Length: 356
Image (cartoon, rainbow, N blue to C red; front, side):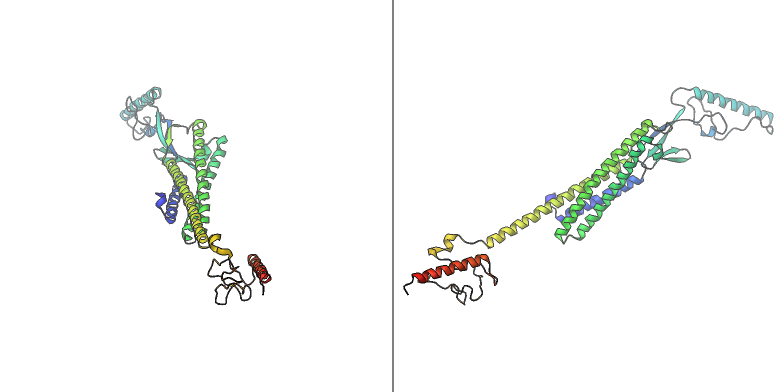
């Protein structure tokens, strides 16, 4: 699938995954549902009219009322009413004593709780009561928790930097070299972000497990499991690493494409400027020009070139003894000077051999 995608499509896919990872990581850090479970707490005793409304039902027989029972010693009540209230109160106290000595889990209740980086909340009858999770952690693990928090912020910061660089790459897509450099930096930021996120998540898990074992007794959970915030954090990490893979793939493939284009251009240039074999160029001891575009200033090699651009013969035959094989500019070059020297020496030898 990636082989058939264009560079812009790969960049858009990386940007989409980075955006999703950034949004999920911020949401996970701000919520307090990384871990959730139940706390085992003792039910409030039903030994006073004030506490009766906080009691639940006893398995043996009901012993509570919705509202506190009136004081049977109130002098404003009739004697008959006071006797009835005294019997009710005595029966409730008997049930309360029976409740205290009842075996099993009946004197305990389980309260739901959820915990995040910042707070731990416990569900009560009148709503949730939250405490700072940093204060709940043991002293020897608070440093690890702070490192986890710093790693989470670094994770989000690097993700944000990669997000901005990917947007900048899309804006500069018409400039291939600049876009390629930006893509390389975006890939580095995304990979480092994923590593920091993994470290942060693992450190928080370690801190929570240590708090469960040696934390405050009134907070230690009876049962617990990871919550949806924890799942969001790891989904964010997966999206981040996916974006890093796509970004590196885009960078590598673009580099390969550029090198392939450069190699093709170089081969075309070499093919266009390739000289014919020596045996074809120099038949019969003569030298011929391999380029029809060669032009030389007047007076430099006028003995070998006619004013109309054709080759002039030198010596007795029609075949010239020397013709330039490369171009020469006004300032000349070492090859041109060497060829001119050879031409002059050949002309001098011919004059010396000539009987005239």
